[in-house]
Length: 241
Image 1: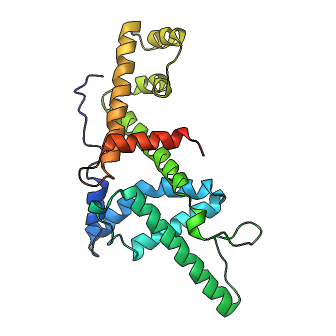
Image 2: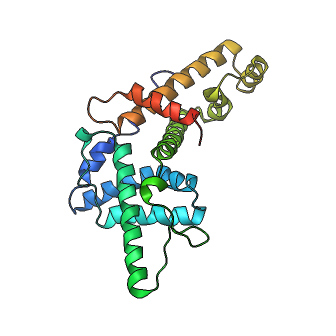
Image 3: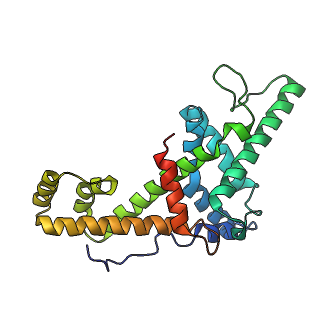
């Protein structure tokens, strides 16, 4: 795969530019908001799962949150000059959960009925959203989703360049070094010399870092440091759940 293999701006327009496009009620604004919700469904869902909600409940709460954004709780208050989109989305999610708890409480007090999707399996209410949603957990879910999107983007690049058969065999080297015997095996599989395989691995790793930085830049304020954000997300991932 040559270095000039048509690296396209996969993540254009930027996430912040999508946020700005969501202003108003035009079809374009609704489409931009829909695209934004699709891009960030996964970290919201992952975070809710990591905090103890089962899969169905986490999916339901995620759907409610993004439906809220799509149908009226727009991102008019979001401003790229104020910081990371990651931080803004987490704040919006906490606010949504807090409002949902208050609404459920009013329903129960007023009508003696109604269900609360944020109750645990024994019917006990979950603690306030500020403690329920741990920032570090959300950041880890964000990092996992970002890496998954970057991996998918890189896979598309290889496919479009006619190297789809290379991607899966080379992918393990993104996570770490494989033993030399493994290199010889994969080189034979791809009909490459071991030297050519090492070059292909180097290019894969380099391009993956570039794609990850591209994705990170979409969520930074103007002048934000992508390398600093990358270091933080790697630290969060290394810390585990």
